[in-house]
Each structure stands twice: as C-alpha cells, then as structure tokens.
Length: 138
Image (cartoon, rainbow, N blue to C red; front, top):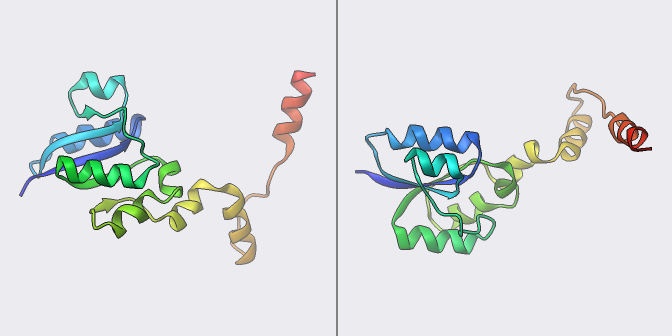
C-alpha cells in the first residue's frame, strides 16, 4: 500500500529525504513543510509553506485532511518542542525521536549536565567564544 509522506523541515537534510522518498515504490506522494525553493523546483515534493510545524494540532489536522500516512521530522527544533510526541499520541505514524530524546541533541547544556551526572567523558564547556566576539566588537 502506498502512503503520502509529510517531511517536516526546509534544509538540505529534508531535501535529501524528499529526494529519496519520492523514488520509493511505497510512496504515493511527498509533501514538505515548510520546504524551500530547491525542494519545490526539483519536483521531489510539494512544499507547504503555510503549515506551522510547531503547532501539533495544525500538523495533525493537515495530515488527516490530506491522508498523510507517515510524518518524517528532520530539524531538531520541532522535535525538541514535542511534535513527534504529539503526533504519535494522536495516532499518526511518525519518524523522529521524542522531545526527551531530542533534548540530547537540542540542548548542549542538558547534554553536558547529563554527561557530568553519569561520568560520561565529554569536552569541557568553553566560554571563550562570547569573550572573543566581544573583543572583536570593541
């Protein structure tokens, strides 16, 4: 059975996902929100620029109206905001980590504290970049 797929995002990663999905025999159509000019002009997906990808209810409604059978979330910001959690709870098949898992990538502060708590080796935090930028601006 072929499915319509909604790819969330608008960067190079999402363009590559749209490219691959469009070629899958299991894929009926590919939609991308918000997408970008390259995705739109390549013909790999139909871009939906007006869909608010941070509004789980809006994404759910869109999926139900358009018969989307799978959502693939690319960028970390909607993941950290809980989009995957919301869609899974609403019964929409979603590929992307939960907000809790996405926090590992989305928050350096969270990750550093987690590594420190469990004695996981990691680089130390460097506060020189803001000082360097301030020095350049002075």
